[in-house]
Length: 108
Image (cartoon, rainbow, N blue to C red):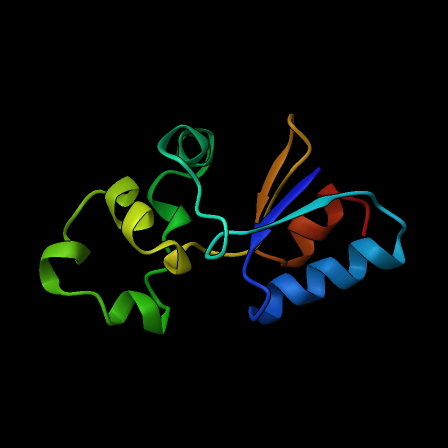
């Protein structure tokens, strides 16, 4: 299982705590410290499309107009912090965010 997020993100922190409490083995991928390659972004973009970009975030609002009008993959490659977080996958299932429906997928 891989959890993609930022260590400073409140939702990512909640997900990590819940997974730790449940004894779930996972790899945490800090998307700012270890940026994803174009090939690594592709399955996430395939699964979530433009919803992978958190357009309500301060980081997104700080983008210039040209970048806000760019494709999601270009936005994320240049500014990974605008990714909606956390994204969790076990290779088969994918979730985004830490709402009850996402938690239910992982039995939490």
